[in-house]
Amino acid sequence: MRPRPIVVGTDGTENSKEAVRWAAREANRRGLPLRVAYVFDWEWGESPYDLSGGSYDRAHKHAEAVTGNAVHEARAAVLNVDVEGDPLVGHAAARLLAESDDAELMVLGSRGRGAFAGLMPGSVSQRVATRAACSAVVVRGRGGDLTEGPVAVGLDASDAAERVLEVAFEEAAGRGSTLLVIRARVPVGFQAGDVALPEPPAAERARVEEQLAPWRRRHPEVPVEVVLTTDGAASALAEASTRARLIVVGSRGRGTFTGTVLGSVGLQLLQHADCPVYIVREPAHRRG
Image 1: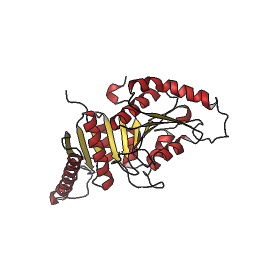
Image 2: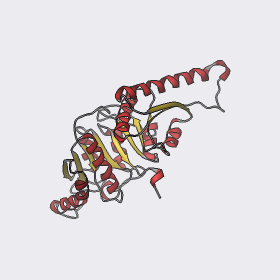
Image 3: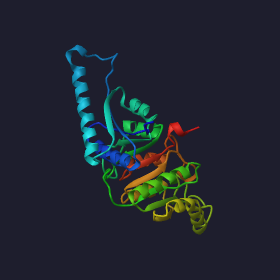
Image 4: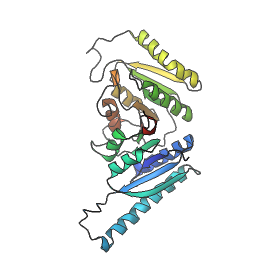
């Protein structure tokens, strides 16, 4: 049985090319096939254009060219990557979400660079990243070709924390990176001094170390640095993203990472992180 692919969305822009290269390297590292998805929006039943005039054919040829260029970009990044791609017709977010049902990982690009640039609310990448049926990576900020810096992970007290740690340790191990574990000591929406902290730093650090112990034993090759911070979770992770090669967060949180939809921390990182953001979800085919 063919393994489930990594799916990367592309639109031909430079940022989406970075996403394709990132996805190709990740597919190669995991031994998974890569599927390139370019969606061109064509309303079959509602088009005001005369299809016999060749408009659809021109649009389809353009879509084939974008897809072909993305496949070439993937092979240029990883010579022997198992990659395929075909143009898809429909609304981009809806078609990409449908692709995520059978994917192991969804990879997306993001527009903008720097601290004040990011995904616009309602953009295709944000809609897919916040609702995909599997884990999603948004390649943003300094881009997807980073080879230096740690993998950073936001650690909370949610039920999903173990799955987030599993992914973070695997990603750090696969890159030969240090893992930077960030634990925010104050709840989302508060600042230091607004609330009484439940325990002293030494006790909280001991609890974090206990949570990390099984993963340290499973991945002894991964150096781990633990940071307890009284900054907000989003700001602490955004600051870490300026030197990290990847940020890993859960799709939802409890305690210090509580939010809605994706989670307020994840949403802020999608808009402001300076490196790719990995949003961990259990794939749909593994749930239940």
